[in-house]
Length: 253
Image (cartoon, rainbow, N blue to C red; front, side, top):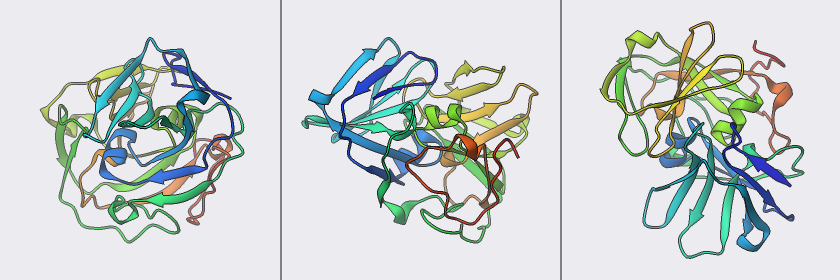
C-alpha cells in the first residue's frame, strides 16, 4: 500500500496488516492538522520511504516527533521515541484502506465546535479569537465568534490534514498577526494553503477566487463556532463514517 503528501515530496509504502485507525483530539494533533488527526501504525520493518526530499520533523515533546512535508505542509507521521513502530496519517494513504476507526483519544480536550462522535455541541460565546501554530512561531487574533464551520473531505484536504479538514470563513484583512512565519503552497486549481514551516501546522486556505478560511483547529477555546456541514463527501476516506447528522454535499455545497 502506498501513501504520500499532497505535492509528492514525501512518498511511502507500507506492508499490511495495518493497525486500525486511532483518532486523536489532543491539542497538538488539532493544532498541526487543523482539525483532529487520525492514524494507523506499522512496525518499521513494514514501512519504507520511497521519496523523502520534503520530509521534515518537529520535536513536539520528549516522547515523540512529528513528521510533515516542508513543501506542502501535509501532516504525515508521529514517531514515538525509542519504539520500532510509526504512526501514519490515514488520510495520506492512497486507495481503499479496509480500515476503521477503533477508538478516540483525548476526546475530553476536543475542540468546542464539534463532538468526537455524534452531533456538535451548542456554540459557545467568543468575542475575540486567538490562534497559533503548534510551535508558536505564528500567532494571530481576529474578531469572533468563529460561527459556522465546514468540514471538507476532498482529497487535497485529507492529504494535508491527515484525516479531513474543518475551517471557517473570515476576511483575510481581519487577521492581526502578533508573530508570522508562514510558508504557502499553491495547489492544483490555484488555491493557496498557508502553514508553519517549522512545525507543519496548517493555518489557512485561500481559494482561487480570493475567498479566505482559517483552520478551526488552530483557534484556542472558546471559539463560538459550530460544525454545520460536510462537503466533498464523495471523496471521503473509507475508514470513517460521518455520524453527526449534519448536511452532506457530494461536491462543494
